[in-house]
Length: 335
Ligand SMILES: [Fe+2]
Ligand SMILES: [Fe+2]
Image (cartoon, rainbow, N blue to C red; front, side, top):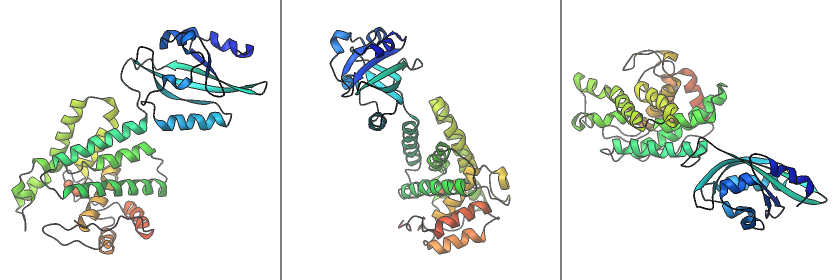
């Protein structure tokens, strides 16, 4: 072992030293205690001996890329101890070139808050949330087999519009907030699961009382989502909950204050609900429904323009138009 690297082994954190082929040259006492591997057992083995599939592949890709360029790298690893239990740690690996050879010194810091379970990075949390919300939305609206393509398109268009509006108006919304709006948009009509089918799918004109019942889907939806989230009682869903609630409750509010359920106007309506409102109406127009033929995209775009500042947030309509003009909108629906 190179003398000058020896001092790293006296750190209180777990330390591993490898050669350029990632073969283990030395580990310290803390490393032995945490992993259950003694120096005798592990020296000479490849550092990947502790690897598990719980560490995403792109973590390793990023690590090798940095180290091969001679840069230090830090990240999160989920490794396996000798007794097969998992060990979550944040690691910093620094390369050292000594007498023409490269050595890597890895210093692990345990993620104390994780005494069991897995570390999940933000992207993975977001993708799990997205899948859960989709299952939830589809299962609530299962009575309408045509609904899934509509929900998927609303989600995609919401993402496009939120991103574009964020850039165009320099709103500085973090990427995860934009993704949260897109994921939650799929839930906008979840409250329709509680509306009698006879009213929901009634062809022709609705009586006033029937319309009132249909309009209840906003407040019922909030009640449903509130129950689900309180059951989950997990802080990783906290932000998603307020976004989902705003979308469900306010996606039928109108910019000029003539919408429902609370007749909010302008920016009193949360941005996420204003976005979904544009997208939901647009997709409904370009879709075939039992009571109407589908409109062409130019016709639907014209409708948005005519209702700019009436039904819809004028700035959002402008952002939507830039998507249209650049050919970013999805192909017309067949359903
Ligand atoms: Fe709705
Ligand atoms: Fe909808």
